Image (cartoon, rainbow, N blue to C red; front, side, top):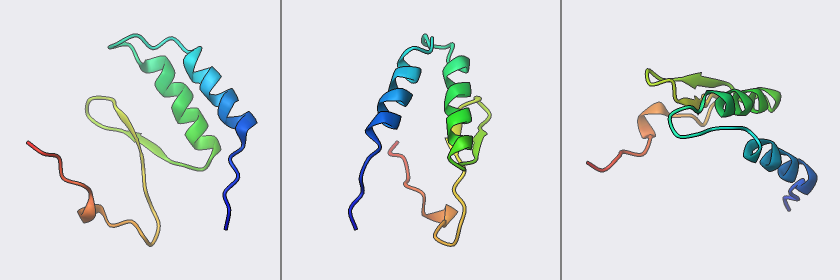
Length: 72
């Protein structure tokens, strides 16, 4: 199986992200763009208590207890 990246889509998305204002500490605009794009791809996104977004993994292969542990 060979994966063929959609170069037009990738470049368009990168341009949209780079053109979106997102100074340190004020990332609300860029996160809305990312969440909208994720939704268009069928990926659910949720925010944690610090309002950081992350994809919500679901399906038979998802095992929440197998997440990588952070080093202290």
